[in-house]
Image 1 (tube, helix red, strand yellow):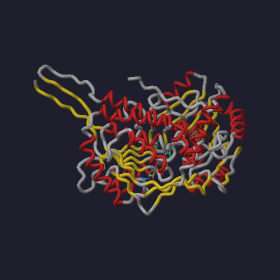
Image 2 (cartoon, helix red, strand yellow):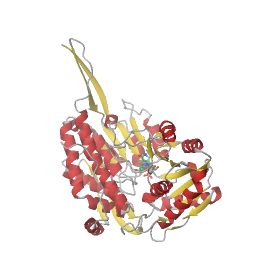
Image 3 (cartoon, protein in one colour):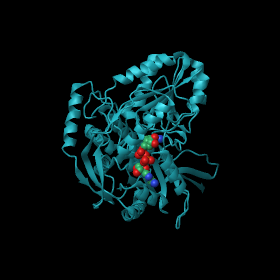
Image 4 (cartoon, protein in one colour):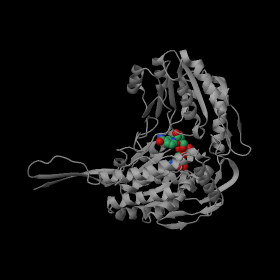
Length: 514
Ligand code: NAD
């Protein structure tokens, strides 16, 4: 088998590639506005009540209307998943892995189409949507191979007269709850990690991006995944989410999303409900407040470029986005001026236009939340770029830089999840690192420095799950930079890493006397 390597990103400077994406956009545009059912045990279920998915860049445009699960349907899906577990858990790991490889091949063939759905449903500019699809392919290819590596367990010692084996078995029914910001990659990655390890899944995608998840269900079916292994049940988090998290037959929950929902799930899952005979496992990957530290001995152009790209890519709606920068005072003005200059050059507009670097935030609630921080920013610092927004057509927020902010200011502490970066001054590198660590999150961070001692100090003391030197703090690659953070950023499950699959299994020791 070909060893795993990451799927290359599309080069949109190439005319042919641009044309191919335009074709995909046209195809998807001709398909929007349709109705989608739920899928439980392969059966299509249509409900009266619908989740309406809108284009955030053209808020009057309906991308799709998706049936909405409720408690009754969630219960039915649980029974199907529970019954299917008995057969799916017995399917050989090689066969399960093959389905992932097949799904990867189908996704590669439909690559631009899948990305185009995200351009319309999530407001993802071309480059961001393309990276999302590439990451979904990576998860399929990587977890398939990881399962093959784990299928025979791991070596243990045997004494004379004894034969010991150590292997892994699946857990049971998993509830997979995914966010809208990587509506393909994270949704698909967390789903197939559970599936390839022999579990069955109740998939509840985010309510703002259910159509792309439906498209992935079609790919899984085409790849040969048996009915009932993944059950597609979008629905209100508070109703369907709580019901399934509490359910006594839920064996594990794989959640990616905000801090508050993650904590709620963790707490509820800890309660033993009637008929429940296990401790539920919770994988929770949550928010971030990620910092780029700029040293005085540093490539200052690289620093400014890294801050701007990490802060404003996909409108700052990445858990890894740079939402705070800490710059040592000797170079503060120089870096800040360049950040402002670069920010003002960014193009903001409809994501279907390839020339736009940035588009919208996801919906009205996000627009209200993000723009409410303009006032906070004004009172806590100086808005030196952006600070304006327009929701007349779509939810457009201009990239915003807030300078001269105190380390404990709200804009330096709270996850805004939009295109706002707060900038603080530090007297030296040690203080910069202290400020960087002064948050309840611990997801990503970057240090721009040419001082080896400072980099080594950061390697030890910068308390984040994903630390980068001399580059931005977004863009972890499956199989290269396993992803996940500390503290309120979650359980540090490291998606796309060598330990991720084992979180979905339990190990078994068998010792035979010879
Ligand atoms: P969210 O927490 O609002 O929603 C995530 C999912 O949880 C959605 O499917 C939602 O419907 C569901 N949900 C809501 N209430 C629930 C409940 N009571 N029970 C069960 N499920 C419920 O997050 P979001 O707005 O979709 O995503 C943005 C957040 O996700 C940000 O905080 C971001 O940092 C985080 N995120 C983290 C990572 C990571 O790997 N650490 C990756 C992507 C996004």
